Image (cartoon, rainbow, N blue to C red; front, side, top):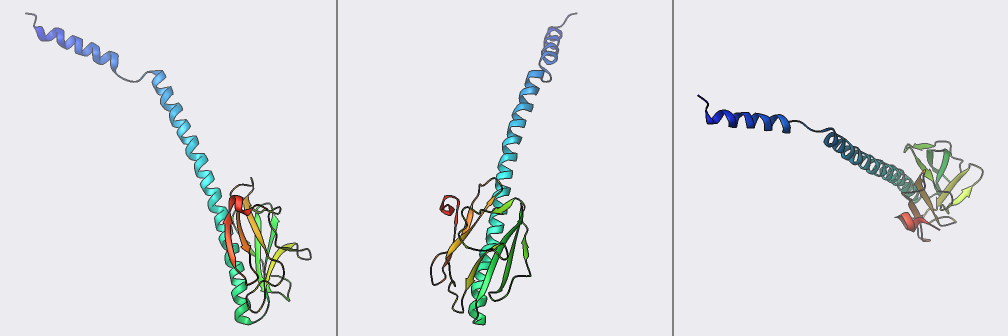
Length: 180
């Protein structure tokens, strides 16, 4: 007694056997797409991380300069903020009276960040191999105006701090506005 359902069940089983799973081409396409997305994500993450490091070092330098200015007005003496590049990715800052040589250097610990020497216009103090800015008892720059420019080791993500007026205005800028 053949039944009509038997033939339909055979066809359903044959369809299930031929359409189950993924082919090698489909798996390769999925792996290639996932690899491309992972590469794009990694590049974006590294760019974001580099910007974050430059911004962190920039903020520390900005606050050191503002602290020198503030300390000068509070103590009614001339104070100095000094910055130096100790090694490939080791920037140090010192806050001290202008009459003394800096001995207490603070590490600005942001790997891959350097002082952009071509776009830094602060006074270069050769005796301590550092750039400096001095503020007098009124918080005004004592001498040369200028800027200190930071970037990552590839020269991208420029950030700078300007001492731009004789009354001691301190401002920041980024990228093309930090170029000479």
